[in-house]
Length: 172
Image (cartoon, rainbow, N blue to C red; front, side, top):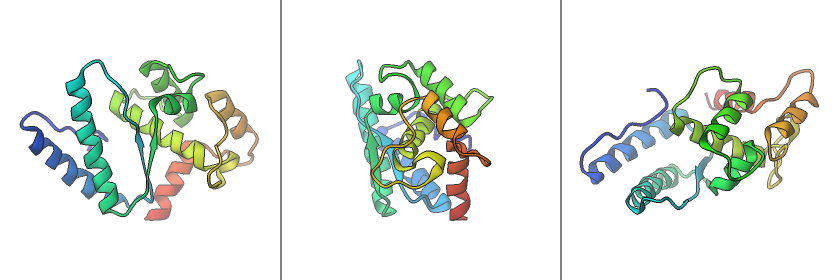
């Protein structure tokens, strides 16, 4: 699997079933402790927004069936957690995600968006140095705040990438 679930063509009900089966299997395999999802946003194409709403509903159902808490973040909040403003372009968010995670390869837009939501959630639940801080915002609203937080925590620099990897390792 490449990290993006491809639903293909065909009747919507069948594609949503495929999404449900695949997400349920991934949640069972990886055993996350939380799900973060991007909130509803308005699009120019109402039909696309409606279909996206169906897919979000399936994702939230899968999380509820796995008894996982779901955290929802508005798109502008996700963008502000990585860039200097809530109106950043998809390219700006992708560059910020690559910088924060130290990625060299170009990811699919959907994968970049998902990572941005994960980083947003992590920045709001962890303080500088990766310490768990319940209900307190993380190191700040932009990449420069992340860099200051990373520089302030030697000798092992706690990056969002390291924190995500540690979270995955603890579940194994």
